[in-house]
Image (cartoon, rainbow, N blue to C red):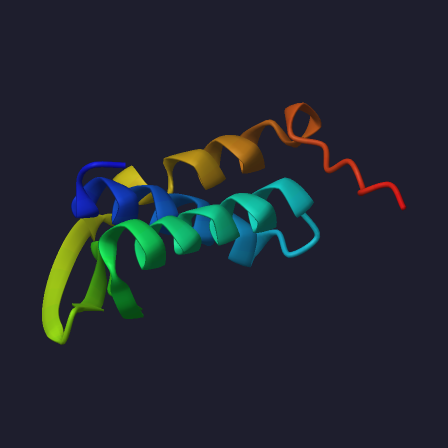
Amino acid sequence: MKSLQDAIYNWLTIKIVSDARPEDTAAQATTQLFEQILAEEHNVDSKELKRDALMYYVTVVQEGNSKEYRFPRDLIEVMLDQIRQEPDKYVNYPEED
Protein backbone atom coordinates (compact mmCIF):
# COMPACT_ATOMS: atom_id res chain seq x y z
CA MET A 1 0.00 0.00 0.00
CA LYS A 2 1.72 3.15 -1.20
CA SER A 3 0.08 5.90 0.86
CA LEU A 4 0.24 6.00 4.65
CA GLN A 5 -3.08 7.86 4.69
CA ASP A 6 -4.73 5.08 2.63
CA ALA A 7 -3.32 2.41 4.94
CA ILE A 8 -4.62 4.28 8.00
CA TYR A 9 -8.03 4.74 6.37
CA ASN A 10 -8.29 1.02 5.56
CA TRP A 11 -7.08 0.01 9.03
CA LEU A 12 -9.51 2.38 10.74
CA THR A 13 -12.50 1.30 8.65
CA ILE A 14 -12.03 -2.39 9.46
CA LYS A 15 -10.99 -1.70 13.07
CA ILE A 16 -14.34 -0.03 13.69
CA VAL A 17 -16.06 -3.14 12.34
CA SER A 18 -13.89 -5.56 14.33
CA ASP A 19 -14.39 -3.55 17.55
CA ALA A 20 -18.16 -3.64 17.05
CA ARG A 21 -18.11 -7.34 16.07
CA PRO A 22 -15.44 -9.09 18.15
CA GLU A 23 -16.74 -12.49 17.01
CA ASP A 24 -16.14 -11.57 13.34
CA THR A 25 -13.02 -13.58 12.53
CA ALA A 26 -12.62 -12.05 9.05
CA ALA A 27 -12.71 -8.51 10.45
CA GLN A 28 -10.20 -9.46 13.16
CA ALA A 29 -7.81 -11.00 10.61
CA THR A 30 -8.13 -8.04 8.25
CA THR A 31 -7.44 -5.59 11.09
CA GLN A 32 -4.28 -7.53 11.92
CA LEU A 33 -3.25 -7.45 8.24
CA PHE A 34 -3.54 -3.66 8.10
CA GLU A 35 -1.70 -3.31 11.41
CA GLN A 36 1.11 -5.36 9.88
CA ILE A 37 1.12 -3.15 6.76
CA LEU A 38 1.32 -0.03 8.93
CA ALA A 39 4.23 -1.47 10.90
CA GLU A 40 6.22 -3.12 8.12
CA GLU A 41 5.57 -0.93 5.08
CA HIS A 42 5.17 2.44 6.80
CA ASN A 43 7.29 2.03 9.94
CA VAL A 44 4.43 3.09 12.21
CA ASP A 45 5.52 2.54 15.80
CA SER A 46 2.24 3.37 17.51
CA LYS A 47 -1.30 4.57 16.85
CA GLU A 48 -3.72 6.54 18.98
CA LEU A 49 -7.40 6.76 18.08
CA LYS A 50 -9.90 9.38 19.22
CA ARG A 51 -13.29 10.44 17.96
CA ASP A 52 -15.86 13.13 18.45
CA ALA A 53 -19.35 13.65 17.05
CA LEU A 54 -18.08 14.29 13.53
CA MET A 55 -14.55 12.95 13.10
CA TYR A 56 -12.07 10.19 13.87
CA TYR A 57 -8.54 11.33 14.72
CA VAL A 58 -5.65 8.95 14.30
CA THR A 59 -2.24 9.99 15.56
CA VAL A 60 0.63 7.82 14.41
CA VAL A 61 4.28 7.81 15.35
CA GLN A 62 6.44 7.01 12.36
CA GLU A 63 10.20 6.89 12.78
CA GLY A 64 9.96 9.16 15.84
CA ASN A 65 7.68 11.73 14.19
CA SER A 66 4.05 12.19 15.23
CA LYS A 67 1.36 13.04 12.69
CA GLU A 68 -2.43 13.30 12.99
CA TYR A 69 -4.95 12.24 10.35
CA ARG A 70 -8.65 13.13 10.41
CA PHE A 71 -11.50 11.20 8.81
CA PRO A 72 -15.23 11.98 8.81
CA ARG A 73 -17.20 9.46 10.86
CA ASP A 74 -19.77 8.87 8.12
CA LEU A 75 -16.96 7.89 5.72
CA ILE A 76 -15.33 5.51 8.20
CA GLU A 77 -18.54 3.97 9.51
CA VAL A 78 -20.11 3.21 6.12
CA MET A 79 -19.07 -0.46 6.20
CA LEU A 80 -20.31 -0.96 9.75
CA ASP A 81 -23.59 0.77 8.90
CA GLN A 82 -24.06 -1.51 5.90
CA ILE A 83 -23.41 -4.61 8.03
CA ARG A 84 -25.91 -3.43 10.62
CA GLN A 85 -28.56 -2.73 7.97
CA GLU A 86 -28.17 -6.13 6.29
CA PRO A 87 -26.73 -8.52 8.88
CA ASP A 88 -27.86 -11.61 6.95
CA LYS A 89 -25.35 -10.73 4.21
CA TYR A 90 -22.46 -10.61 6.69
CA VAL A 91 -22.64 -13.90 8.54
CA ASN A 92 -19.56 -14.84 10.55
CA TYR A 93 -18.23 -18.26 9.67
CA PRO A 94 -16.20 -19.71 12.55
CA GLU A 95 -12.71 -20.93 11.84
CA GLU A 96 -12.38 -24.66 11.53
CA ASP A 97 -9.93 -26.46 13.78
